[in-house]
Image 1: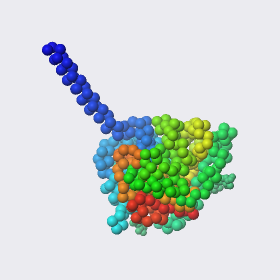
Image 2: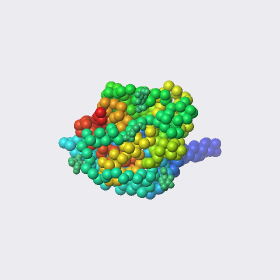
Image 3: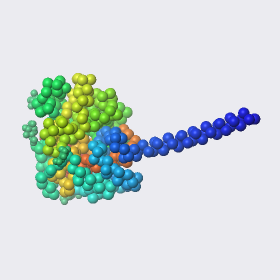
Image 4: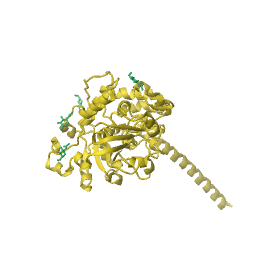
Length: 416
Ligand SMILES: *[C@@H]1O[C@H](CO)[C@@H](O)[C@H](O)[C@H]1NC(C)=O
Ligand SMILES: *[C@@H]1O[C@H](CO)[C@@H](O)[C@H](O)[C@H]1NC(C)=O
Ligand SMILES: *[C@@H]1O[C@H](CO)[C@@H](O)[C@H](O)[C@H]1NC(C)=O
Ligand SMILES: *[C@@H]1O[C@H](CO)[C@@H](O)[C@H](O)[C@H]1NC(C)=O
């Protein structure tokens, strides 16, 4: 009898422990979403995991996010400058996005006159914070508040004023014999050759269930961003990768596994890193945003045959100037998103560029990336990139139809 009682008690205690553990674990899992905003170092990593495509998702935010995040926004404001991240407002929330969209018939497409006033208050604050921080010492003196030129003129500006060049052996600090060993021998335009039809594939969650894979793969070349995978998602995003544009944080931060993850071993790689607004290459080289040079060299040593370029950082600000010039308000003085840079790169290389889900389609969703389950939360937080203004510009120069945006999230750009 005594023996049985002891066993019963033991079982009860064990059950209790299991229940407590389960509750703790569940709480931890939920907390996971919030960690990014609590500690700076984690915020970088997690934000970047979320931002592995950095920013192409569409939209702006959801009301849900406002409620959930308003408590942490204060802390966030202080952290953002240190977090050197590229997180941006993405998270397509339905109500807030609706304001930024224009109804055409019964199709809602991005309104090219969207203003920051349409953002939720918290994001407006983040934008103001970045404006007063002016981390990259932007001193823009060009025109503002002017009427946007017709699309054709704007395309000419993009073509003539944005120099899409890669770092090569004659660029200042890279003209050492050591660097000659690492930089690709062929220049970028030689390497890719002339391209006809190209696709730029965002990492937006709205690509899920799009079934765009075969259409995307039918292009001569496909550009993807950061850690966006194709395996397991072929139906929606295709499997061809001709160029992959990655940010410097991705290749620097160990957790991202850039050196070992095989998805990076396909196609031509390009890395970009923000420089101060006026910086010459020397100054940027001494103080890059992320010191990615060591990992660049290491990757080059391990994968001699794979072309891997470093984007000339001047390009970001040449493009930024045009974004500012064509916006009615001050845009964030931070570099354009990877998405915008990728569109620009392909526009200079290809006759025709189809961009997928930069402007939100009817599939807009709270999920940030098609390959992750995260909902808007972390994605909506940044307002680091002037993404709203990028979308306005992209909508303005779109040569495709509103219906294609609505149905496929697809825009067409031809610069030549
Ligand atoms: C945007 O503003 C311009 C200039 O005011 C106007 O001509 C155009 O119709 C507007 N576009 C939309 C979609 O509201
Ligand atoms: C911006 O300018 C300030 C003051 O001139 C300087 O201290 C700072 O290092 C500059 N920042 C960058 C990123 O160049
Ligand atoms: C683009 O780069 C080339 C070569 O570096 C230079 O000659 C040219 O002036 C640049 N164009 C612009 C618009 O900066
Ligand atoms: C790339 O190399 C080719 C052949 O050497 C040359 O004709 C071309 O001008 C180069 N392009 C750039 C952008 O440097």
